[in-house]
Image (cartoon, rainbow, N blue to C red):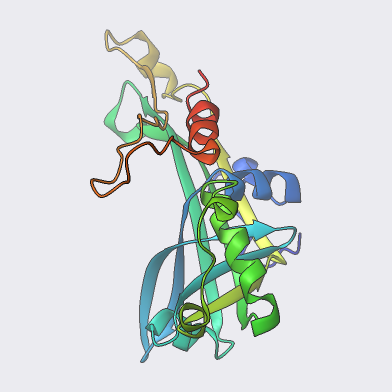
Length: 217
């Protein structure tokens, strides 16, 4: 993965990772990314869903949305994904922290052409819940016309990961203060059927597999 002064981890550099495996694992376990760009001379950050295939990320939106309108111009952007895995409670207020995994990507977006748009939308759908695309109605011509898909090639990126216990000052370890970690984990609850659902419809395979996969202890 390319690295420059803007993607180099400076604060706690030992937590920095630049290999594809680390970066892709963090991206693949996320659901929302935040895209930062300049709009009318001012910084803007927009959250949006995404999907990844190999070294490309895909995002989509209405053709008139400011995210799409600005990014399709080929401007510089920064995109981030982060997970909080635990609250790290130290003996001092100063050394409280989090265990986390984060990725920051730098680059530019490009429009996905119409011939590849449907495939790109499927990549986004599969990222959220694999198999759902095959169970539902495909986008029609009107919906495709109202939607644009952008791709961001992952060429320059950095990951930052913290794991482990609190790190206190040596003199604080003798204090009678509890310290440790509160682990955090995403939970998936039983699905709630649509109130307008037809009678007799079973929960589809994509949903049951998603619940099983994400509730592994």
